[in-house]
Amino acid sequence: MEVLVNVLLLATVVAVGVMAGVYFTFSAFVMRSLDMIEKPAGMMAMQTINREILKSAFLPLFFLSSAACAVFVVIAILDLSEGGALPMLAGAMAYLGGMFLVTVLANVPLNDQLEATPAHGAEGEPMWRRYMQRWVAWNHVRTVSCFVATALLAAALAMRV
Image (cartoon, rainbow, N blue to C red; front, top):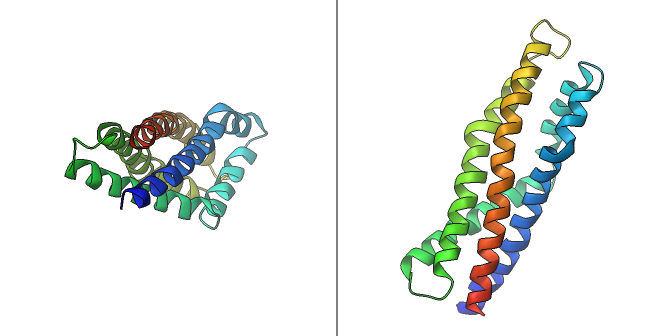
């Protein structure tokens, strides 16, 4: 069982690190770039990204990494004295709270609002302004949470092997 947990933990460290990179990319330059191009092209591009991401490898990675972290919460709670249990628990909670819940409760509803707004309509520009302000702030939370989770889960793995 220990080997299985360690293999799952290693795979999850990689997956969470990939997710950190995805969110970092949007925080570091994608969103600013979309905001700098001719209006409403940035908004239309983001609407397209939001539709396409649902058909990409992102979605399975999003759900599988979240499920793995939920498993790690249970494993850690069942034996807090086990080597690496505390960073495993902290990393999994950081990911589930700062990535999964933020995505479900903040970013996805904003994506849905953006999708429902015609980019060329009267509400397009105001919606894009609100979206940029709120979505990017929440994406920063996801980015930091993923980096923290990666470090903590990697520490847990190092303590277990």
